[in-house]
Image 1: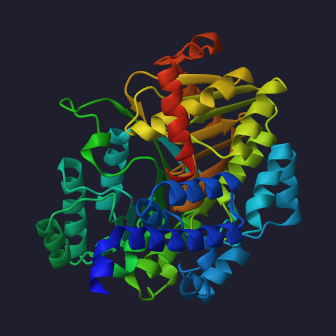
Image 2: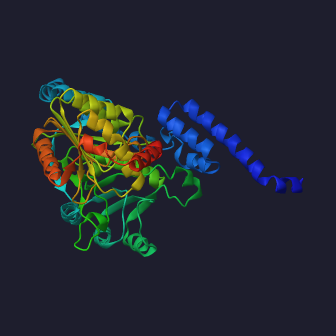
Image 3: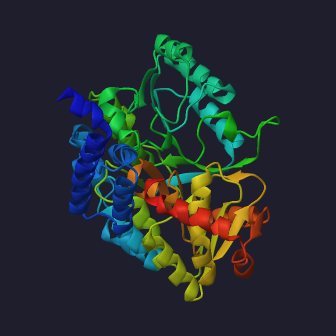
Length: 484
């Protein structure tokens, strides 16, 4: 028997592989997910023995449906339930919004059905261009904290800018300020000395889904891509800028990094705080005491309507993707999008094509130089279809553009963490601020047009002349796009 196993070990291993692969393929079919994604997984399982099973184990499980990310500990709190009632709009308020937003009111109704995404009316907003300004403002706000500091980041490194941040957090924790910090274990990198320093200072911190922990290795594809900072429940930040020297554009840096962030003061901090607390409840595996001090009243006279939209395996719907889809479909004049990764689903591509074909000014800004070879070529595979539909596509040439923004008709804009790709729409934890305000939207449009001055416009005829080898790379990478 042992001799038989020895002589036929590879044959038996191949048989076992395909038994498991067929089982996995049947499981995928029963999920009724996107056909392209289904075919991609089945192809990988069939064509790549052993490797296909590993890819499916790490990337093929649908955790949104499995509901492993429990939100009930936070959402069942009476304070959180009262917040939903606090933000219920009266008929007159809804009527005023309806008159102002016209077709864009559909966005409000779409997300207002989600109790965690109420529309808040009274906010002060500051668009922040690039990391240097963001950290200047953030450090000043952190130093002024009186009650608590909450940070949630995909990338946190203890390099130059990261050490400055951590030093401030340690000082505030020693003063008695409650500092809670969560960072993604894949994106972040900190030494044990830094972690010991934070622990000794009184900072409470947790890594999001540690990849080295055996029970979580199968979920390494589900990463927390959010960038949230909340100070005293009164000031908040959300956008594309992580905590790393790569973003700051130091003189000796490798390349210029162009990004966009948003500073919020006002009612929108309350739903932003709720989303942080849901993440904290998950990473800490214990209930955080939720008190009224986490949700203070902030008197803001100006009216700038904002919704905080989150999506990921902890949400029932792909909220951010749906919001972008509706925004494009309700556009009447223009749609301007900036994203570092453009690997969209068919719904978004069709919406952009239709908008351009009916005469709207649809423009897409992407990087010319990407930090991901596969993402770059997968993005390029979509460009010809867009150009044929009269979508104007630009590539940023000054450096790497990492901003994730959309502005529509001088009425609606969004700044956040979500890229226009499968990963942001369906896999990772993301969060965006949806803004219904002319002043903010016009400012974001102005920034977009300024970025075009450092960009090149792609022309269909010239783009079609790229080599067959380039097209082959694009087609190959596109096959993997549901997994990227």
